[in-house]
Image 1 (cartoon, protein in one colour):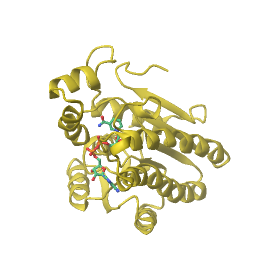
Image 2 (spheres, rainbow, N blue to C red):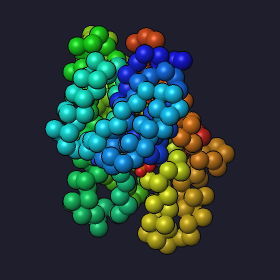
Image 3 (cartoon, rainbow, N blue to C red):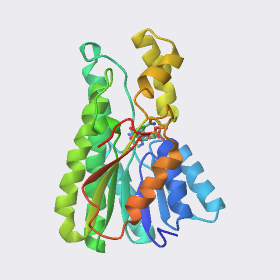
Image 4 (cartoon, rainbow, N blue to C red):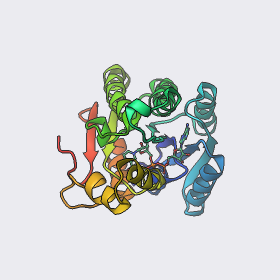
Amino acid sequence: MRLKDRTALITGAGRGIGRAIAEHYAREGARVAVADLDPDTANDVARAIREGGGEAMALAMDVTDEQAVEDGFQAVADQWGGVDIALANAGIQHIDPIHKLAYGDWQKVINVHLNGAFLVTRAALGQMYAGGGGAMLYMGSVHSVEASPLKSPYVAAKHGLLGLCRTVAKEGAEYRVRSNIICPGFVRTPLVEKQIPEQAKELGIPEEEVIRNVMLKNTVDGQFTTVEDVSELAVHLAAFPSAALTGQSIVVSHGWHMQ
Ligand code: NAD
C-alpha cells in the first residue's frame, strides 16, 4: 500500500485515465475525492471504490468554475482534513486547423486545461501548505513536448502546464510540496475514440490509417499506452519519498517521444 492514509483529489475522474488513477490510488490505500463535471460518473466511480472496500467521495466540479473548485476542496477538508495529493487531469480535445479554428473553441480548450489547472493548483496548495506538504500532479501529454497538426489549443495548453508544474516545484519546495507532470502517448479513452473519425475526415484518410500512421507511427512497437500504464506512473509520482523528484515531466508513450 504505497498511498496508505493519504488523501487525493483527482479532477476529470469520472471516466478514462482519471477514473483508472482514482481506482488505483484507492487500491494503494488513499482516500480519494473523485471530481468531475459529470456528477453521475463521479458518483459511479466513488461507489465502485467503496464497494471494493476503499474510501471515496464524489464531487461535482467544473474545473473552470472558481467557486466550484474552492467548494470541492473545502468539502474534502471538511470530511478528511485536507488533501495530500491533487491531480489536475480534466481535459477536452478539439480538432481543427488553426485557420478555421473559432476563438470560442480555442478558449474552451485553454480554459479547461490551463485555467482549470491553475484553479485546482491554488486551492490544493492552500491546503498542502497548511498541512505540511504534498504532491501536486498534472496530466500533461506527449503534446506537452511535441506538436501535432489540428490540435493547436490542446498543444499550447499542454505545453503551458509544464511551466505551471515547474513553477509550483520552485514555489512549493519550502512547504514540502513536490510537483510533477505525467505525459502520456495515445490512450484509448473516449477522448481519443472521438478524435479517430474526426481526424480521418479532416485528413481525408481511413480511420485505421489515423491509428497506424498518425497516432502510433512513432512508437517503438505500434501499441497504445494503457490507463494502467498511466496510473502506475501516477502512483509512483505521488508516493515518491523525497524532493529529489520534483519539477519533472515523465513521458509514458511506448517511445513515441524520448527525452
Ligand atoms: P476522457 O474524455 O475519457 O475523460 C475526461 C474527463 O474529464 C471526463 O470524465 C469529463 O467529464 C471530464 N471533464 C471535462 N471537462 C471538465 C471540466 N470542465 N471540469 C471537470 N471535469 C471535466 O479523457 P481522458 O483520455 O481520460 O483524458 C484525461 C486527461 O488525460 C486529459 O487531460 C487528457 O488531455 C489527458 N491525456 C489523454 C491522452 C489520451 O490519449 N487519452 C493522452 C495524453 C493526455
